[in-house]
Picture (cartoon, rainbow, N blue to C red):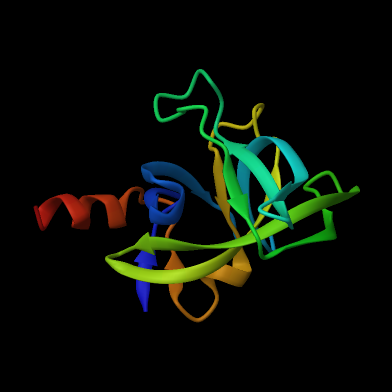
Length: 145
């Protein structure tokens, strides 16, 4: 079992995002990814989800539209206890040199410090959280370079 700190930097290769800051949140059940301009569209005759990740002021933002054919729409309880309907997608995440598939709810995290939140569903049976530490996976990745 890996020890993970209160925050880390992760890679989302399918979204072409690398070293993106993520908050590790044992109080949250699911994981969330900051995005905007989310809508269902027709693409090549099929209904897909179109979305943009990050904000224009984020250094990794490139304004690129991403498309997901496999997505869902479900109710998620926010940290304030209110239910919010959100789209969810699955994408690969690389952390501690390991690739895993993770479900993210897509939401506006503009007011939050970190664009990604990793919750208990992702952490369970794989990570022990030490809140005094940070960027353990990112440091390991850079040591291997």
